[in-house]
Image (cartoon, rainbow, N blue to C red; front, top):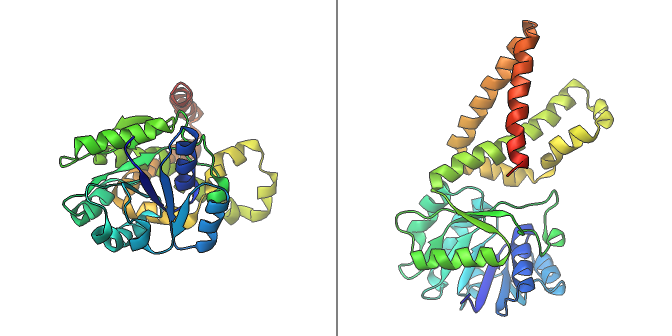
Length: 284
């Protein structure tokens, strides 16, 4: 891997775990942390996750061969506008966001002619966030989706593929459109449903939440995720999120109808169909 200096913008769970994973696998270059919170950056430095840090965009990206956008997707455009005139010639910019089409449409036109952008999305996370939750094995055997478009530089794509495979991730190539529909269905929708389920129980009687067992805890664990982050994801993948929500609403309405009509045979068939499909996740 040819990156002598990597700047990670946003030293939270994903950004810090990337730095730790690269160190674990022998990366000898310099890793600079860049962000708004000096307290967080100092913590990352003390934990030896990064080698140095800056809170000034133009300083943090100086001489960086690779810049990783690991902040909220909502901040990408502002960040790139701040750094675009200070990027090293030949540098690569990549990201870790869970929305790709909107990111590519927004950022690609902002990139200087001599800077390449590769859109990426590591499928990894934990129920906690922030630098303290970072681990050096977060990406082991995880998938990392890369979404090149017609203008993507093949050499830069190969370098980013090698970067993620060094962390232990398995890279998968998708179109931005395929990515956004896929993850609206398998990631964004489940988070919305988890939030909605907890709110539904609160509306029935918030006191009964204390009686929830392991099933409820497992099902709604992702409702512990950052509401602001998921607001931004929904905003930047609005059309596909709406598409999957409407499909879910139709499925739920079908089950409501079966219960109203006491059509237990049809309800059981719905359960059996879901049970059979659910086993695909275990074999993945």
